[in-house]
Amino acid sequence: TSTPFDDRSRPVYSSVPGEECRDSVPEIPMSSSSSRPRWFLLGGMLVFAVLLRLAPQLMVRMISPEHDMKTVNHLWGFTPMLALGLYAGAFIRSRWQAVGLMLLTQLAGDLGIWALSGRMDHAFSWGVYCAYPLCTLLGRPLQQYHSWGRVQAGSFLASTVFFVVSNFGVWAIDQRVYGWEMYPMTWAGLQTCFWMAIPFAKQFIATPIYAA
Image (cartoon, rainbow, N blue to C red; front, side, top):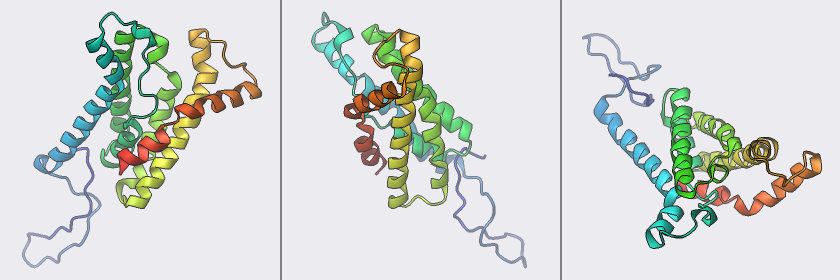
């Protein structure tokens, strides 16, 4: 049976007597047993990513159940989500399955943060939901060429795209949805938004580490 993963590097030889061997074919379906490790690895990393985002709230809840959870911040930016997006984009055959999987993982983490903190604005950033599909699609060129250098270049590019799109979303969308008045809707306000986001841009460190 075919799987969502591509595997086009194996040579295929004809079983018909007298027919010449073919060194390559456009696409070779993988067996379910050969794809299982990749699915297991990806699924395990996605669960780890959700738990890592929930870790601060879960730890505080376990140590001090009476603590005001609205004051607990999660690990802004220091998660493997972008690296997982690149991995999903590179190894899942359907780009829409890859994008959907990343959005569902982000949604699961956001719902958990919302449930623990009681703050929807602390959990959901709508610019993030615009950034992750773009970052996942950046993994498509890594399907055939996934050397260490290309992966690190993709990590830096994905981090840059995420920083720009997500913070533009904070300035253009989140402020209106949540009634914030932090940044004026001007060019100067947008510049201030990006400047204030620099301390939270841990994805520039986290993504290359997780991708490696």
